[in-house]
Amino acid sequence: MVRIDALLSARLFLAPHQVGDRIYFISNLGGHLSLYAMDAGGSVPEPLLPPHLALQNPDLLGGEPFAVFPGLGKILVMLDRDGDENYQPMLVPIDGGFPSPAFGGKLDGYRVHLGHVDHARGIAYMTAESRKESMNHGFAGDVASGALEELGRDPYGFEISGVNEDGTKAAILSMYTVGDNLLRLWTRGGGEPRVLIGKPLAARKPGEKVPLNAVGSCHFADGDKGLLFLTSLFEDTYGLGYVTLEGAGAPEPRAVSVKGARHKGSGEMTKLERLRPGRFLVGYSIDGCNWLYEGSFDERALTMTLDRVVCGEGPLANGVAGEWHYDEAGDRYTLSFSTAVTPTQIYKVEGADRARITTVTRERVLGVPLDHLAPGEDASFTSHDGLRVSARLYLPSPKLGYKGPRPLVYYVHGGPQSQERPNFAWFSMPLIQFLTLNGFSVFVPNARGSTGYGLDYTKRVDKDWGGQDRLDHVHAMTKVLPRDERVDTSRAAVVGRSYGGYMTLTLAGRHPELWSAACDMFGPFDLFTFLDRIPETWKPYFEIALGTAANDREFLTERSPKTHLHQLRCPLLVIQGKNDPRVVERESRDLVDHLRATGKDVEYLMFENEGHDVLKMENRVRCYNAITDFFKKHLLP
Image 1 (cartoon, rainbow, N blue to C red):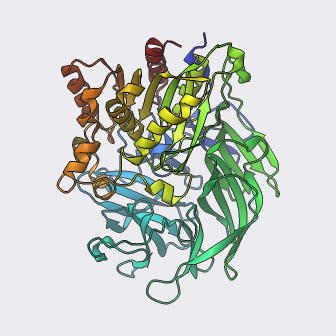
Image 2 (tube, one colour; image 1 turned 90 degrees about the vertical axis):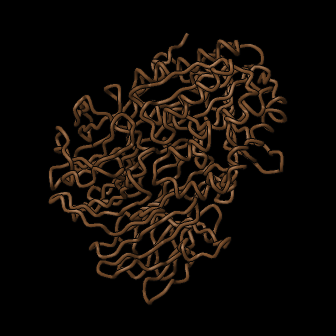
Image 3 (cartoon, rainbow, N blue to C red; image 1 turned 180 degrees about the horizontal axis):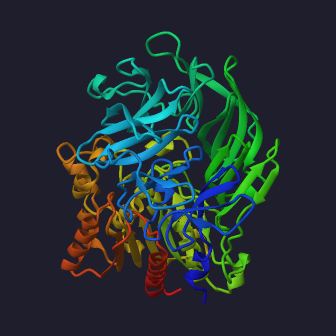
């Protein structure tokens, strides 16, 4: 029988940055995520942080995990404590060492996210969430001197999305809910930032609907005459927009046409990065897989012409580029890439035509042939109201010799406004593969509310947690999957993390007849206590996107799993990190205590040194084994 250690033996290689002849990256080589460096041509990785320190999953950071300043001989790295997400900017020598506060401890009272980095000027732009009140601050930090300049503050976010070359202007983003953004222009010495796109919440009339814009990834065009950005203003699946910065008042956004894309399939534009004057990187997520292009921007004609593929073809096809970095001095990329069946590797993409692709690492799963893993197949379906829902079905390889219909594990992703993708670096994919190796089929839907399918699809979960998306899952379980003779829905379990944990509890409580087992990983149990316990800076967003106890009591009661879990019939496994700031440990403890008091069959697994993820190797082994053994016990594969 395959051990989970075989899958986890493929270490993670994340966020690679090539600087000169060195590659800096994050890996769990030592059993937890830490910072390493190696020669670009290949060498034994060198640890840059003391062994007792662990880094966070880069996908949860809300910014860059680190930045290298070779001229200063320093690395700026974002550190928390075992997943508590109270990130602090710390400096370590470029050859490694013990971290010290980057700005003299002036940001101790904040949860800090590293955004735009001006390497030439040695400036780090950061968003800092207050840990005492609902306020976000924007700072520019001089890495060499430790001086801080506050650009402004806003309870709905103060993201410094773009900065001009001399640092005198910045594009500032605030977000009320997903897609409802406010773009402002900050000018040094210019007073209150000027509104460019969107309408401030305070200026809106009661009940006023403002067109969504989803503005992001802002970049000053050469000469600061205009601003180029990602937006949904002209296409629901996102595209490029432009506003002139000449004149006063709010300019009219204009569409930028994009030519030269070579991909096929459904998805959306996700990234826009400036490489050098006139050249940009444009990214797409197509059926969950990354495509990255280089292109030239013609400001007069408002066109972006894509002329080189960086990721999406050849060895970098049908997978996820978790992070990438462009080295302007060397005109090359380093990126981390994985698929559903291949672990993360660091790749270099070089050459004028970007055709020279080399692998820096050779990670592999130990003792498991590639044809024993499950690549998955498209299992998209039409839901109860005619809406198409994207999904994938993972089945045990025929090489494993399993006979007859396979018991089903129904996996619900978190977010809710995120997307399950073929990404071996993410927690779910080793679990999916381990389950198929143990004889289970695994169904993974991207129900309404997910990203990757346009803004309209993503917005369908706002103010509707556990509503129509729940019915997508019920429809799949009752109308779609029973028609597949390879799947046994009479032996089914549901599992999910974060919002997926919330949905797991909701489905197990409201539709108990569907499940033989359930596993909740740090999911909200009582929406009233959940809203009370989240970080203060999250509360303004959730007041709009979900509701408030004062104004939405009936709705929050009806949508809380707590209201329905007296109907729970199946055994439940609850998994939680002690340091989780998003769904605090007390939330899961309340769930366990409540159900045990009513005689329900509940197991509780709590990790003392984890947060809103399970990252440390010994914990991952225990967690994956606990879930799989629990399902084997109750579904009998």
